[in-house]
Length: 336
Ligand SMILES: CC(C)(COP(=O)(O)OP(=O)(O)OC[C@H]1O[C@@H](n2cnc3c(N)ncnc32)[C@H](O)[C@@H]1OP(=O)(O)O)[C@@H](O)C(=O)NCCC(=O)NCCS
Image (cartoon, rainbow, N blue to C red; front, side, top):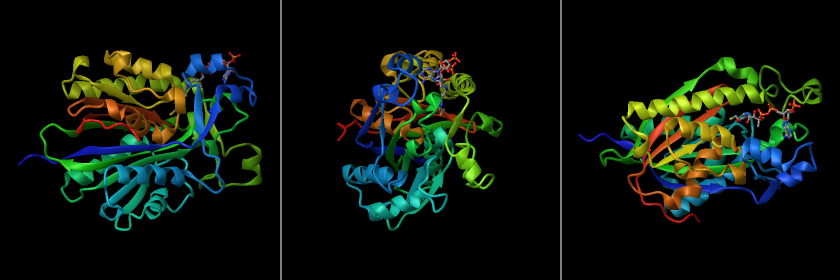
């Protein structure tokens, strides 16, 4: 019997209209376009400005577009996994809100929290449901309103992050060798001090003190995170290639987490692949945390061909990191 694998059969994204440029950031903190561009590769990022709108707003837009594009009836969706680091509420799960907003009344839904590796962790989890043979339509949506936890007085972090959402539909395939073939996922909780939102959770609930100390914003020790990311994202991408006997020539695309162009370059160099095979959109959106991988797929969808070998790679707070190998299952359609 041929094994069932999970294939991505559609992808869609959503970014808010407001564009926060490097030039505007220059008016907010002591920085400049040249520094941001050379150190990170980022030129602009999107910001969700609407009143009373959280990550679910963007996630639902991405899922609605995905359902329309793939001619999927929302009532046929069985499971929605949302990866987010900026949930609308501590509870209930943002996935639950999105399910309701898109009319996926028959789906069960839950959130996955693995910081910037969330999409890889969620897609790998979703694939397990499909591989059992029981689930046939699963959506993974990454959505983050990073602007809700970015300190726009901190020049070392406010230049990096942006808002956005991306969603994929996963369905079973028995076509030999297609779909998600392998993944390597890793976590190391001892990295907590380097990238963390210190307060607002159960350890340090909100108080006047936590607000005064700006503890509800992202705390990042950039150099430590950079060092960790450069080594580990590259290592794990190389590991997944070796495990699957893939050489650089076999790889059609690297779909990397968009955190810093220099980290992406280090990963592609370690894999031995040229820039032309690397999905890059960090200049447009910055680091949208859980949305970077699906937004990159969305941007490159029209270039993807059935049979393309794609390596996904990500790292994030925690620390968390991982890589996955997927054989793409359809010829890309132009993004809408
Ligand atoms: C944050 C990051 C871009 C900083 O780049 P860097 O090359 O490491 O820069 P450093 O932190 O060493 O700082 C160098 C100098 O630039 C300054 N600087 C920091 N941010 C600046 C900014 N926005 N504009 C201008 N100067 C800035 C620093 O104050 C420092 O000045 P000093 O030498 O006088 O002390 C980089 O460390 C990084 O990308 N880290 C990983 C972050 C990441 O990926 N996070 C997401 C994880 S999923």
